[in-house]
Image (cartoon, rainbow, N blue to C red; front, side, top):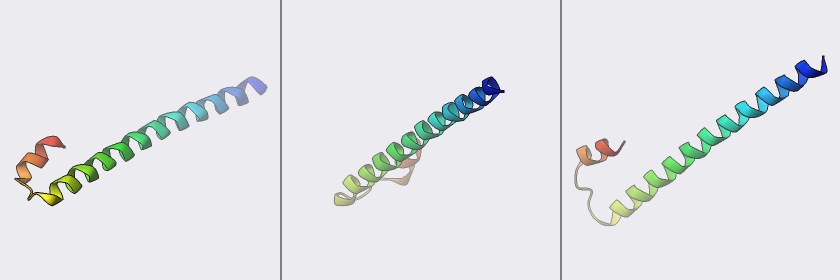
Length: 55
């Protein structure tokens, strides 16, 4: 019984780590996108198609 509970806990923890990493990656991506648009704010944006190729 204890072994089953232990595996459930470890599975949940590993799932949480994966979720946390994907959230971190998403936040980093959004931050870099924001920084890119913020830098482009001073100079006029060149083209929309150029941004589409990045994403």
